[in-house]
Amino acid sequence: MIKVEEILAEQFYQEVEQASGKVLIDFYAPWCAPCKMLAPVVEQIAQEHEDIKVIKINADNSQELMAEFGIRGIPTLLLMNKGELVATQVGAASVSQVTKFVQQ
Image (cartoon, rainbow, N blue to C red):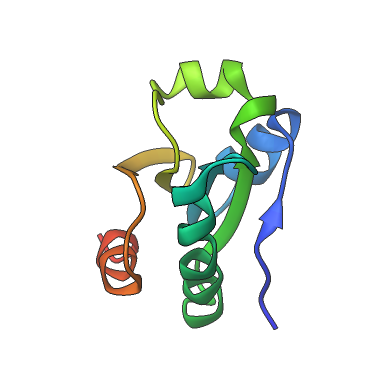
């Protein structure tokens, strides 16, 4: 079973920028209602797309990383490929919307 891995900002460069393929990053906060709505969608994407590494980052603990990517609202999904930012999506989304997002 594929699971969504939660990482700290300090692990970002090792886990994301050195990844050899696509990485979906979910910036969230435990108090954020839209983030809670997006969580099962992200879990499903992780299960359906074994070729994509899926990680979560708590926005409350990652202000510098959020500033680096210009993230102003959560939930925000980043899609990276081989360490390069490919796309950004802000707000809650359906499984089909996130599927289209990761297939870019």
